[in-house]
Each structure stands twice: as C-alpha cells, then as structure tokens.
Image (cartoon, rainbow, N blue to C red; front, side, top):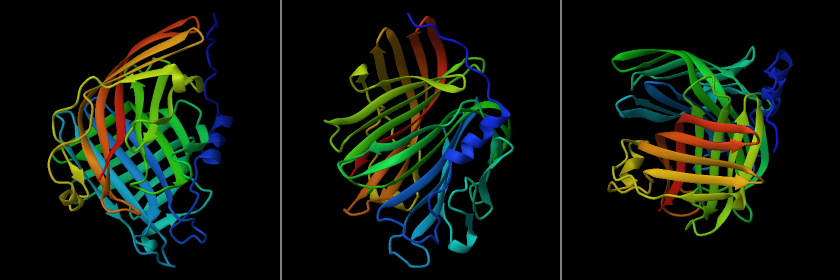
Length: 357
C-alpha cells in the first residue's frame, strides 16, 4: 500500500507559478483572434452564509467588428444563506477595458481581478443590484494545467485550475454587509475555440472542505455528447495540501443521478434573455453520486444540490440558446488513498451545461 506523505507548504518561489500559467491569451482589441474564441477567468467563494461567483470573460461579438472582435463581460452571482439569488451580466466597451496578453490582471470598468503579492485580489460591483465585493484570495495549492480538453472532434479548451484558496475581505448585498475571513474559494481559467450550442455537454463541480484544517480538495468533471449518451471524458481529481495527488478518470468512475431537483431556477440571467427560455423545467439533479476506484484507492463522493440560478447564452451557429445551471450544494467525501483514510464534509459549487435548445 502506498504511503501518503505530507506536502511541503507553499513558499515565496511558488508565487511565480500563478502568473506563469494563469494569464489572458487575447484582448478585445487584439488581432488574429481565431473563430469561436472564448476565454474566462472564474472566481468562486463558498462562505458560511453566502456564495459568490465572479466571472470575467471574453467572447465573440455578435457582429464582428475590426475594432472590438471580442466582448468583455462580467457575470456576478450572489446567493444568501436563505437560497435567494441575485446578480447580473454586464458588457463593457473597449475603452472601459484594461488588460494585456500574457498578463493575469484585468479591469472591466471599476471591476478588476489582479494577482498581487502572491494572492488574487478581486473588486467587483453591481450598483443597480446593491452587490459589491472586495476580496483577497490566498492560494493553498499549486495551479494545475490541462492543455487540451476535448469537447468534440474539432473543439477543445485549455483549463487552468487553482482548486483551493482562502478568501478574506468584505461583501455587501442589499441590507447586509459580510465580513469574510478564511472562507473556502476556487479559481480557474478556460481558453479555447468552440461554439455554444454545439454537440457537447458538461458537468463540473468544485468540492471544498468546510474545515480549513482538512488537507484534501476535489474537482469533478464530465464531458459528453449533446444527448449525454456518449462520455468523452470524466475525472475526479484530488489535491492534498499544495499538490494534485490523485486523479481518477474514465472507467475508474461510476456516476449516478438518482433524482431530479423539482424546483425551478431561482434566477435567470441576463433577465431579458430569460424570455427565450419559457417555463420552469430544468434538468438539474437533486443528488449526484460519484464512486471512483483504481489500484487500491477508492473515493465515494455524494453531492446534494440545494438550489440554482441559470445563465442564458445565445448559441453561436444554431438557433436557440445554451443554459448554464450554477448550483449550490454540499457533499460527503469518504474513501482511502494509499494508507490514509479520507472522510470530510464539503461545500459544493457546480455548473451543468445540460440544456441546449
């Protein structure tokens, strides 16, 4: 049986790993942007009494323009402890954008995400919704890079993940100000060329321990064809302290969705786009069970989903829209890796790209 050894803590020299791997590949004014190009830098905070999602993205303009082939966009979602969601999607003009290729920092208007002194600093605000956040996210693990994640025969993307951070600062929402101290957080960046509404779906979840002393953090993903009858890839990745320690993939995993979440989405954004998705039906499970085993290691991950909001994205080359379900939940993790038992409760933020219509 393999022996699980402690990982060395992050040191000052590790700080260069983040901007060396997590940087913008294009800008709104950049030349030679390939067709279908998309990029986003995503931050999640999973606190005791709220969830926050902030996503800085670049996507193709509906009508290509030589001045601005890519649209800068901020998506901000906030969920309070009672399951109430709020937020918005805001586009920005070229003159409101400050960023450079090869640099991790970005500013859309007065909203920004920067890497300073070994930490991510995010400042985001939606004055019309009364939501504001000023946070420092301290990485607890090295970044992990997957350079060619397949979506279809001709489409793929690059994924950079910093799976476990701790957030501190302040968040304001209508009627309340939250002081944040040592809250679990997650960050990733996706870059690639693909079409919304294409022949793929995905499931993704970050699983972060409630107890800050717990050394393990997890990420689950599954990419399938449009009907979800053919799985292109699936994985359960486990980080122990600073490093990616164990990855289960393909046939190592058995996945089950025993029931469906019966409620309708709490919020659909942008609000005007919600008119394109009538009704309240949504393909979101109530539970997601992932059992992974290989070479003597085994992990059981049971995720329970509470409620969700949805982001509506117009399809690129086909009529209709793609719907991303952003889900809040919790999880129980049990198993054994090498000679070490794994058992803890976790917070979950998940995203499902199930419904393209």
